Length: 497
Ligand code: NAD
Image 1 (cartoon, helix red, strand yellow):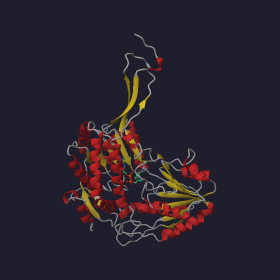
Image 2 (cartoon, protein in one colour):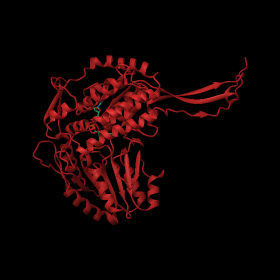
Image 3 (cartoon, rainbow, N blue to C red):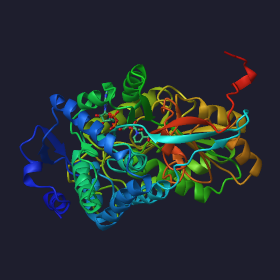
Image 4 (cartoon, rainbow, N blue to C red):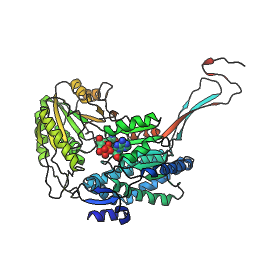
């Protein structure tokens, strides 16, 4: 299928794809596939006002009815899974099965959110006063701005939107300027769900296209009480304080620097498979990509030998080819950053295996993944380079390995490979991993939607997706009801008049 065929199958029209100011490149071959129309900053006040108007109607729709819209979205996604996944591959360069996996993640969160729409529950709490009852209720919060990164061009939107919608909040979505087409294709699918739903308010979910300046309008507006932003720590460092300064609620999902500790008892065969998928899957462009292996000195050389052998046979190339496991980086600037990081690593004492450009003969920024043996956790190891670089370090003592793992600015995902119960439990304990995700005998990437997703420190502290992440999209209210004929005060305070 040509790029044009893929876009047509996803329902995008010539008028939508041409005549605009934002050029969209496919990382597969570097071809410019569209010039889409950008949202003007002067349009933002109207867009935000429409979201506010939609909120006033949507907040009063019963939550299970709101869930019906998300159920229909899930159905439409199932029906268009292949078409949307093909656009993910075209625009983000993901291999076919990862493109399909991304859409499956959207379907999964829709299913989850439908159930959640009947479970927006609060607690009842014992009151200290006779004839009183205390309880918590959860209310819709208001429009939710969703700013997304290029590497999960649709799944992150769905994590936010499925929950925001059942929680009673309209959504304004600003996708990455590198992946507007996937977002436009996704809105077509949503439109079909909205048409079947029938009476959703106008402006319930809106899409705005453009770069940081369009995102900035969402960040600045007090009419957007929730701002979910996914991207680099650089972006989060700008957005988070601005939202906080206007008393908004930021949900930040930022960069990671994820590690695996490989203990002497580890099943090395399994560890190697987990390392390769986590480190080179999505060409190392996942927030949860494995970037550091901390291996016990007794097995480190064996592990590195197995990894270099496994890396040597990895098929790199056109992500549309079913045999490919490593597709392109998003652009040449990304490949340049990888090359710079490898030269920094060498200067900081590292020994590099692999790396460099992979000429696949079709254009695009294809690279060979790299393994770098490091004598210590130097500055470059502590930095997230969004490319397939895996740093390997050694350890003797588990506590020192955990300390090394935690000694980075980011705190997203982590794991240990061990068959030793004590080691596993220490890793998961209060003195263990400081990350939002900590796994045993599973790599750090490829989370299920059932758990809350997010991380600590410079990863931003936000939580999305499963568990009780829905609470981030609602406001909590404590209610105390007096059904007695007296008016006792709390803490036995006396105030007779
Ligand atoms: P990026 O920070 O360059 O851009 C992300 C989004 O933020 C884009 O839509 C961009 O237009 C917008 N943006 C940038 N500056 C802004 C500003 N000042 N105000 C408003 N909007 C602004 O990130 P990227 O290169 O698209 O994505 C890669 C990064 O995202 C990596 O660091 C990766 O770890 C991170 N990421 C994190 C998660 C997570 O859940 N923790 C998920 C995916 C990606």
